[in-house]
Picture 1 (spheres, rainbow, N blue to C red):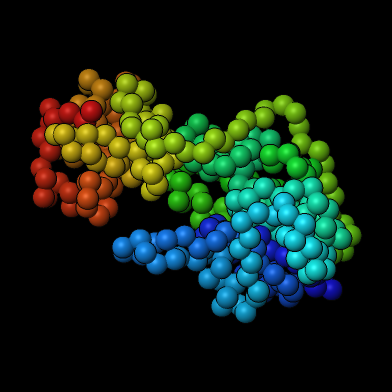
Picture 2 (cartoon, rainbow, N blue to C red):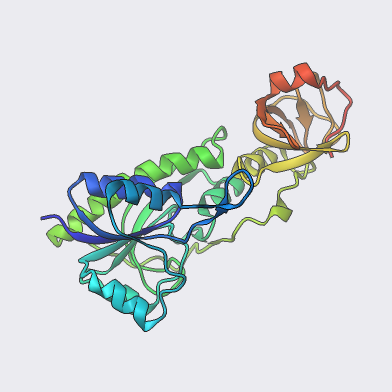
Length: 307
């Protein structure tokens, strides 16, 4: 039997789950997402969220409340008479009254292996910390920050060539499949929950642009993970000849020298230990490009310095 579901999500990451739930026959009675924000070339046009765009194509009612804490918001939510709510990167705290409203509860898809990386930026933080793996988990929500009981999980190795957007896209697809299976088990009455461990709790703080500058004194692997964890946004950066350059993709390389020194004409850069080779970058005010294309226009000789 299909379930009556409220879907709550905002960014691109959420869209595959919404589409998969619809494809598997569940009735999405309403979609909650964040309100449109100014965007476009001049920043004057209101841009709907990716979830709103997908929901409107599906013909599903879309709601963009500024808060869920008022009696009116609760009454509106309850009026949909949903069996459950599915929450994927919604970006708004759900008060207890909302969590209690659906008959079977509210279920969140989180992009980490809880209790590691609770919070706002689990994908970025897992890469930046040098984690060997990440994953997605379905949990029954409570009022804590990603503290609810866990139902199901899928794991995914993090390789050194993965950027944040690479991991984001793979976890988004993996999470959609996991949530569909969790909802099917919920429908059958067979969704089993277990409490999260109190050991190994870490918090994935929101990315601050101030931490994007590259510290070349760190070992090469830490520099690579820092770069990849912030790619493409906000983008880890350094200065070359007083111009800011975002480095979007790199690889470990052989070589040593003063931190930040250019070791050859293929953009191999010395770190505190070892070196990296830049593969993709973006000059300030320019589009992203492959390192080879960049070097054709801006030759960088050995002995130059990234600061």
